[in-house]
Image 1 (cartoon, rainbow, N blue to C red):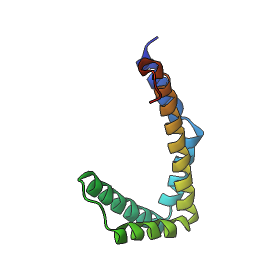
Image 2: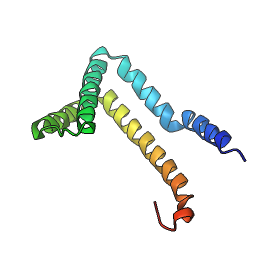
Image 3: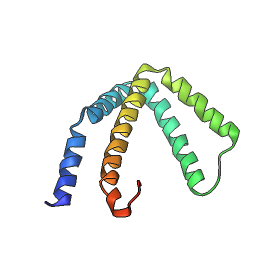
Length: 114
C-alpha cells in the first residue's frame, strides 16, 4: 500500500465532497455581487494583515480586535457571505476531523494521545 496514493485519493475525495461544493457555490454567489465581494475582500485583507502581525510577535490592540469582530458581525448579516462563512466552517471541521483520524492512528507510536 502506497501512502501517497492514498493521500491523493483523500485529496480527490475532499475536492469532490459536499463541503467543498458548498464553499464553491457560496463563493460564486458572493462573487456575483460586487459590493459583497468588495466587503469580503476588505475583511480578509485586514484579517491577513493582523495574522501576519501576530506571527511577527505583535499583538493587535483591543480596539483593532473589536473592529474586526464588528466587521465580522456586519458581514454575517449579508446572506451570501454568511452562507460562505458557514460552508467554510463546515469544511474546516471536516479537515480537522480528518487530521485527528490520521494523528490518532499514530498514537501507538508514542503511547499517549497527540
